Structures are given as C-alpha cells and as structure tokens.
Amino acid sequence: MKKKEKVIIESYTTGLEFKYKGRLIGLLTDEEFRDLIRNKEIQSSLITTETLPFSVLRNIDKGDVKNKRLVISVSEINDKHTSGVLFISQALDLICYADPKIEQIGITTKDDEYLSLSEVGEND
Image (cartoon, rainbow, N blue to C red):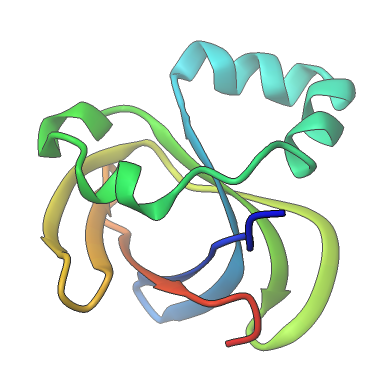
C-alpha cells in the first residue's frame, strides 16, 4: 500500500494563525462547495477520499485555482490530534509561489487570507 502524503496548511489572517495537518483532498468549485454544505453524506465521504498528490497542486497553473476552495481531511489542528474534520478554505485567488525544492506553495484567498502549504511525511 502506498504511504499517504500529508500536508501542513498554515493559515494567516489578521490577528489569527492556524496550523492544520492532514491529507490533501483537492479543490472544489463553488457548485461542489454548495453541494457539500447541503449534504452530510458527501461530507463524510470526503474524509475517506483518496489523497491527492501534493505534486498536482505544485504543477497546477497559477490561475486555475481562482474561485476554488482547498480541502484537506484534518488529522491535527495546532498540533492537537483530531479526526472527522475537513478544512475548507475561503475561495482562492491565486498561487503566489510554488517552490519544488522545499515542497511549499503559497496561496491567497479572495478574503486576503494567506495559506502556506508544505508537504510532510506521514509521521512528521
């Protein structure tokens, strides 16, 4: 069985910082997000969805994230274990940078939130 990849998302907004660790699920359109909010079954199924490789995000065209929402199945929030939780970002604006050498991506949202994503191993 392939070892699951984990990502760390550090979210920076005015006066607030959060650190989420979990499996990358993917990007949702506005329509998919609305369906997700209305349907608990979709929410539950996303938690167990197969992990999206971090390289998919790293190689995406910077403009292709516009108005989409980043989703991860969360295993830790601020270094405290949790389960059954999804992180869904605000609508994304653009990828600011993608550095393949350090496995890191910077994304801004339409609400001026800054998300720093980095890939880590299962036990990191």
